[in-house]
Image 1 (cartoon, rainbow, N blue to C red):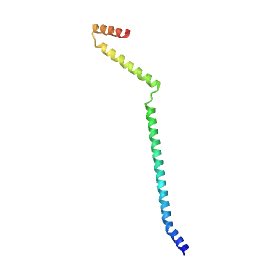
Image 2: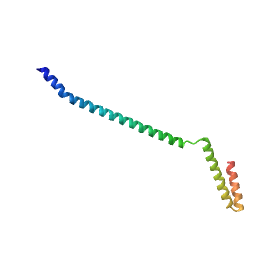
Image 3: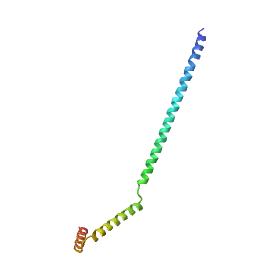
Image 4: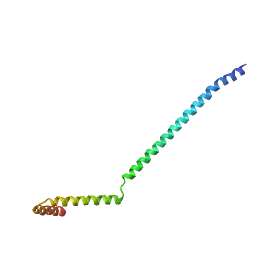
Length: 103
């Protein structure tokens, strides 16, 4: 008689076990999907950061061009400022520039 009860108990517990196993599998699958999504997001973020850094990196030619533009602006500013000076002021400015170069 105990054998009959044993099989009835197993059959009664079996649906719970299957339900628990299914829930465990679903939770595991959800966790795995979440981890994969997070990994994809992190990879996308890293790719974006790498691209931003690449855009911020300056090539030697770009740096050279930037320096040339700065030098041209400086000369243009000096020329403009010199045009506004009287002849005496221009001479004083030239003397001042000469003193700065020799120091």
